[in-house]
Length: 392
Image (cartoon, rainbow, N blue to C red):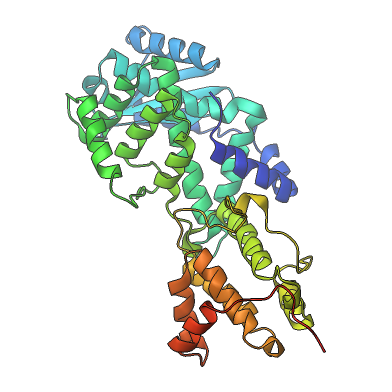
């Protein structure tokens, strides 16, 4: 079982871009909360091996299949009627807390799945020198220091959601069957004593058949997403990660970008501008000056990134996206940068917007922000644009 591509990408970014913060968080990893165990003893009933041997055997099996060997203590929370299971992690120890009637709701296989899920959190925190724990703490700290809801808030949210997906995969690795993993999830969410897994997967399919369905949860993806994601993982679906990203991240939108989305949109913007400025006649001083305001190393004539090119060599936008308005104003910036080029930049921008399938958004921006009328816009769209124009 490997970390999700999301965890890998975020940690790669943080280690590369924030090395001092990364090392500072890493140095705190061995610090322990001396009050944690006392707090648990005060607020729970500890489930000893003598009284709950089957639970402890399930822990041993899960640890073996996950390749870990923590000290594990089990507890039943007091004064909490809501079914839930949580894990509190120390350096070499894990405390699993059952809340509400979980132990009565779940059968042995489902309890095995829940324990596998919780210990998968521990396994992720321990692997690769604690790399993914460091990434989590760093993202949470940056989100806490952020004014408003910005890229680190969205990064922290998605990092947590992908952790739950990873832990579900851990449950599957332990059980080697998706049925108890999904049944335990639905039982804890609903309080039901009986769950038909195939029916729930069909229900999830009906929900996800609607275009644009995205997780609305704060930390844990919604159960129907988790169930279907686990089924994709168990089936080894080749496009499983891409499908999961659509369900968790949704459309690429300027007002909901995490840090990876910011990097993606910045690179995509550069490719779009490179596509617009491909013709040598666009290489005027005014245009170069504007390009340098976007990127100080941009050179008109540079190629668009290969990852942004379609089969016929034209820039393409990722699907789904909500970048039409944003990119329209980028194109408008360059179309209006040098009046000495007359109509050609606007014609080129209109035609590129059509290739990008954002023509309507760009036309709205043009009609609102310039003196051009619809007839003029239609004429420019149909204009033949030369590769080279003579200069005096």
